[in-house]
Image (cartoon, rainbow, N blue to C red; front, side, top):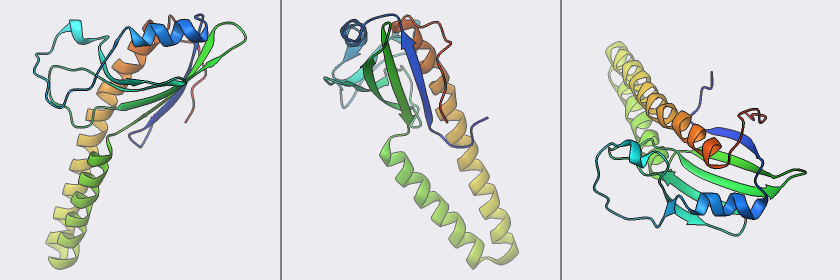
Length: 161
């Protein structure tokens, strides 16, 4: 079990580097500031973001709100047979800032209100941790499976911390 909302792994794909980049590009749309939609299986392989010459920076298009949706940064390298995609999933930077403010509020409550404040602070800290982890890992698993399907990977690639 991972204790932080970030994920690093590598995908070994039978596709060569250019074919792997093209396969991902077929599923990437430009980012939109505001997007309407409903949860649908049609969204499973849709991403929004940018392709680069080395890889991509995307997040999955979902039909619901999840502030903890992982942002994917990946680099595609040529391998001995096919390609290797190094993937890093993390939260959006604004979510880190929000959680930091939340933690500061909990610590202020702990210091200013005595033992009751400590109890409240512990509850607030456990709540934000559980909410963050559930929101991030629920989507991270879906995104990893989707990426493996796009790159036609068999799932045996080594995992990183």
